[in-house]
Amino acid sequence: MSRRIRVLEVVRPSLGGMKKHVQGLVQGLNRDRFEAFLAAPKDETCIQWAARQGVGYVFLEISDRTLSLSDATACLKLRKLIRAIQPDICHFHGFKAAAIGRVAVALCFFAQVTNCEVADALVDDAETASHEVSNAMVDRCPAADTQIAPRVVYTVHNSVLSRSGMHLSAANASAASPTTFYSSAFLGKMCLYAERALARFTHLVITVSKALHQEYSAISGLGPGKVRHIPNGIDLERFLEIRSPDSQHPVSTKRDMGCAAKTPVVGLVSRLIPHKGVKTFLLAIFSLGRMGFTPQVIIAGDGPFRDELEAFAAELGLGDQVRFLGFIEDMVSFYSALDVFVLSSFSEGMPLSVIEAMASGVPVVATRTGGVEEVVMPGAGRLVPPGDPESMAACIRDALLYPEESRIFADRARLHAGENFSLEEMIRKTEEVYEEVLACPGSKTYH
Image 1: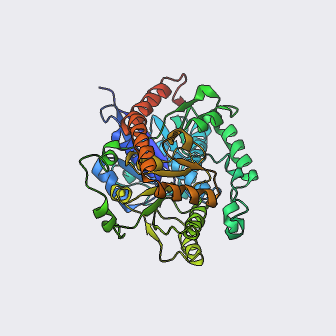
Image 2: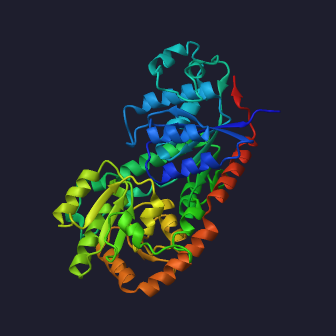
C-alpha cells in the first residue's frame, strides 16, 4: 500500500478565524488518505490540540508584521522542514506564511549549494520540531542534487492588496491612532508585486470569498485557472442548537458571561488590531448612549492593541459598560448571551465570527466589506459602511428597538448559514484541491 499524501499546513501567529479554519481542516482531513503536519508558532493550547489529534506539530515562528528581519530565518527554517518532512503538498495560510513559504519552496527548487550545513547551522534550534516530528528527522538534509519540490496550495483568508482603502470617516478620524493608517497604498502595491513574483511557485490558490476570487484571478501569473473558491465552514451543529426550539432562553448564559439578565448584550469577536475597526465599534456604542441606549458590551478576542483600545473606551466614558474578555474558548456560551452581534472590520475575507453568530440565531450588524455581503444576504442582517460609527449605532439601536424584525432577520440568517457554510463541505472541497494539485503536470524532484 502506498503511503498517505503528506500535507504540511503552515500558518503565522493567529488567535482568530484563521486558527479555527486551519484546526478544523486538519482535524477533518481523511486520515486514510492524508497525513497532516502543522507548522505554527509555539502555542501550548495548539500543542495539546495537536497531541490529541495525532497531528505532527512543528514550531515555526513567523512574525505577524508585514516585514520583519526575522523573515529570512523563518524562511530557512521552513526550507529545512520541507527537506526533512518531504511533504507532497505545502499548504500556506495567509499572505505572510505564503510569501515566506513560497520563497522556501523556491530554494528547494533551485538551491545547488553542496554544503547545506552552512545554511542549516543558522537554524539549528532545539525547538524547531516536536511531537511526531523528531529532531533526527529535521536534521536529515537530503543531497543538494535531489531538492524536494512539493506542490503549493495557498489559502487567501483576507486581502492585503485592498487595505490601502482603509480609512476612518471624518466623524471619528480625530479619535483614531495614527496606527490605524498602517496599511498604505505603497504596502498594498508591494504585496501585489510579491504575489506576481511568487505566482510561478504557486500551483493553486484557494480564496474564502468570491470577492477574493475575483481579486486574485486578476493577478498576472495566477489567473482564473489557478484560483479556486471555497467558502469558510464551521461546525454548524455546535451553533445551530443555541436557539433551537428545545434550547433554554439565554438568561443563564448571560449570567455565565457576567452580564445582567434583563439588560441587552451587544458583542463583538475580533483580533484587536487596527483594521478590525474596534475603535469604530466603541464610537458607535458611545453614540448609542447619546440616543438613550446603554447595552452591556462584551468583546471577545485579544491582540497587540488591547491596551490602547481599553484606554480609548475609558476616554469615551465606557469603562464600566464595555468589558474586554480576551480569548474565549467557549464561543457557544458567548453567542448565546448576545442580543446583537457586531462586526466592525475595514477588511475581511469571509469572517467565521459572522457565520457563527448567524448560525447561533443572533441578529447581526456588520460592515459591508470583502466577503461579508456573501454571508449576510439581504433581509438576513443589517450592513453599514466601514468606519461609520453613526450608521453602526443606528443599526444596533434598530436591532434592539425592533426585536420582531430582528428575529425574522436572524431566522433567515440561521437558515442561510446552515445551508451554505458547513465545515464538512469546506474540508471535502479542500481535499479535492489537494487531489487536483497532485495531478498537475511536472515532477516533484528537481535535479
